[in-house]
Image 1 (tube, rainbow, N blue to C red):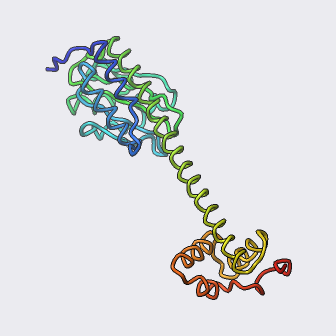
Image 2 (image 1 turned 180 degrees about the vertical axis):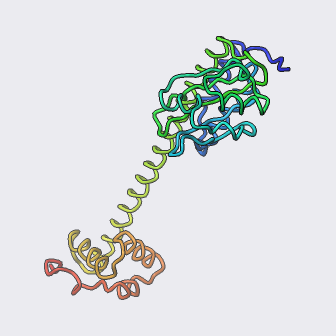
Image 3 (image 1 turned 135 degrees about the vertical axis):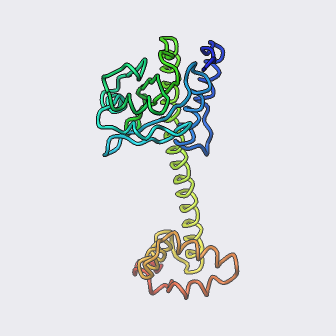
Length: 254
């Protein structure tokens, strides 16, 4: 029999703080797994928790703290309704509740008497719902309901923040790459301007022509030339890429 008491306010505050803690290399599955683990650890009567996400076939279990009952994937069940309508569903006793008979009998066959399904508020798609199971009937009280709703809210925020964090990280990496590319192209332009005694437009025209001729990105040509210059073989690289005064537009000449 489960004897775990209801979570206290200080414990809840700690759980919420942990739930919204972001780790740079953490992904959505890691956050969801941490969320379900915390539910089992902090919600009185909860023996198993799993996160379901909507799919073409109804839903699939994304993460679970244990072996989720396979018979829950019936045509009509509270998980489908929560994913569809975004409203919570609760079964006080699977041995008595007949709203979803196949679902209830399947849970009861696995020893689960109580069930609570809540929508996970998140801006991400697809829709998600968390399911809590108890081996005792009527274990999910109003207090448990409020606690779980608060934790679920913060879990949704954490998942959204992970998405924002990763998206921001990608933007920073792209910006860094763009700045580095611009710097390399500028260096290559300077080398060509000095080597061929041309202006800025002429140096860029040489790079662009070499890029088009070799069907390689301009930044790759620039990187090759800068690297060759640092190794003392710029002339060789220029010949390799066909970078000559004759390869550029006529306005290159002074």
